[in-house]
Amino acid sequence: MKDSKEFYEGMGLKFLEPQNQTEGIREYMELEEEFILKTFNGINTVLDVGCGEGRYLRKLAPIVGKITGIDFSEQLVGLAKKSTSNVNNVTIIFGSAEHLPTLVEETFTYGLLAWNTIGNIPQTLHQCILDNLAKVVEKKIFISTYQCSSAVMDERLRYYDKTNFKVESIDGNQVILEGGLHCANAYPLSYFQTLLESSGFSMETHDLGFVGVMIEGTKK
Ligand SMILES: C[S@@+](CC[C@H](N)C(=O)[O-])C[C@H]1O[C@@H](n2cnc3c(N)ncnc32)[C@H](O)[C@@H]1O
Image (tube, rainbow, N blue to C red):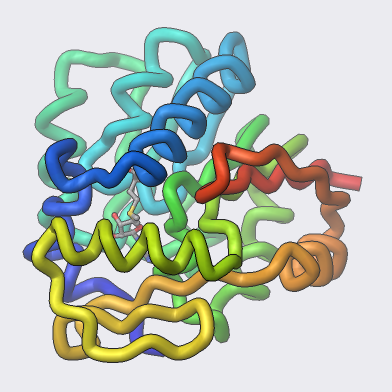
């Protein structure tokens, strides 16, 4: 699986346009936001991995001590910086999650990978990224992702259709879009259980409608 860097330097923002959301995707996004705002309220320091154009940096800055975003898309980092330029508790780093320990000096109370960022990252990097998070996060990580079912796949395909992204192929829970520029994958919960356990986190899950799930990893 290829990473989605080129895609997020260009057309990726179409994913955020509300008119492209199907009912199930809208419900997932609303429940995700509600969960994150409630759970992160009053948390001292937060790391938002794959922060994109800064959606959660803007929403969380007023209710947490400090928040740091990291993203490997120069375009999105630029937008995130611009939209938080008047906020003094936000730091934004241009870089890849797989290099995290060399990019940050401090540790964070909570880490976040929102809106299926994990499903956009090649599977071969997951263990490295989870091991990095175990080094830089003190208490908990939260990973929001798609559930795996045929109903969710149908909903995702309707969503890609509304965004006008061309589906090249489907392989299990992975959808390859736009000539391979973007791969969006989903994994069964048993996969995350093994991944988190091997990086030293225990796992709990919270459904986000029928489409999404929030995986809560607590450092052991
Ligand atoms: C689905 S978007 C989510 C954006 C944002 N978290 C939100 O909820 O609006 C995934 C983001 O992860 C970033 N990303 C993907 N792989 C990455 C990596 N290896 N390191 C850093 N950022 C990455 C992409 O550039 C993109 O902004």
